[in-house]
Length: 195
Image 1: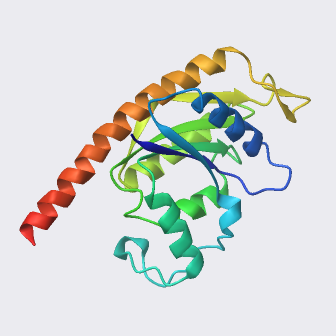
Image 2: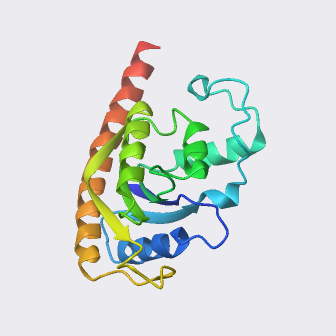
Image 3: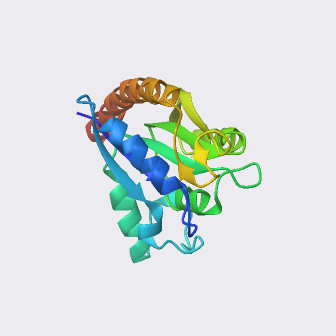
């Protein structure tokens, strides 16, 4: 069974992302075709990227990087829950993505955005970043508006139609995560054979 991380992509005090991610996890928990886990980047206390060697080399020297890498390596796919700040994702999520390389490769990713225009521009930025990290992004996404899905712009009260959109995202993400897992296993066998 594939394992999917629901990544809380904000570390800001008073963030809305935690409530959104918990809603995503609650919906995910009703499914039996994958395992889901909340992963909060705030709990890893990642400073601005401080590794002296590029992540693509896989030579992580800092304890916080090694902890982050070990956690991310556990998963076959990711749901990134992102705010939209200034037409992009949060600096904290970008930084967390930049810390690693191989741990993201050949895995699937889906996106849940929130903001004044549903986080759409943040998700577009994340799709470009994910492509460079060799993640396969699914088409389905969930866009939550601060105007209609948050009471008084603060309390998360998602409209009912988002549940169907979220399940569509899960369907695609789980399917792609299985396919990418097969790709990674084939790559490992080929590498072992060539060694």
